[in-house]
Length: 132
Image 1 (cartoon, helix red, strand yellow):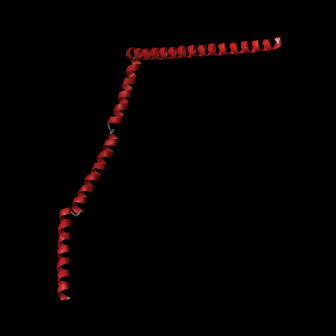
Image 2 (cartoon, helix red, strand yellow):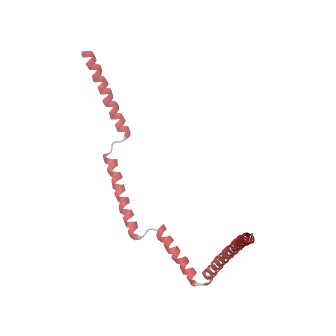
Image 3 (spheres, helix red, strand yellow):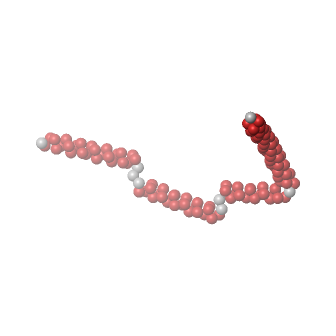
């Protein structure tokens, strides 16, 4: 009987130590996680502050801003070669428009000619009905 009580006692003691260990580990993990997050946030804030300070005080920040301005100018404005190409394309478009003005049929002319042809077909149809 005493052996059974010792066995039960050791099992309960082992389970108790396991539960206490589990909760202690969970608590330490939680503390480490919170401390790690706080440290990371603080480090990020420090890096941002240092970056802003460097941009204000160092010529590198000014150089970087100027480089960004140059990139924006390149995106927004055309080079001489691009302007030449645009002018040549505009000349081609103008030539095409002039060609269309000379060789295309206007809508009013098309409607007038179609109406004339329709009236002639109607006259021919009336004539043929009269002959039959």
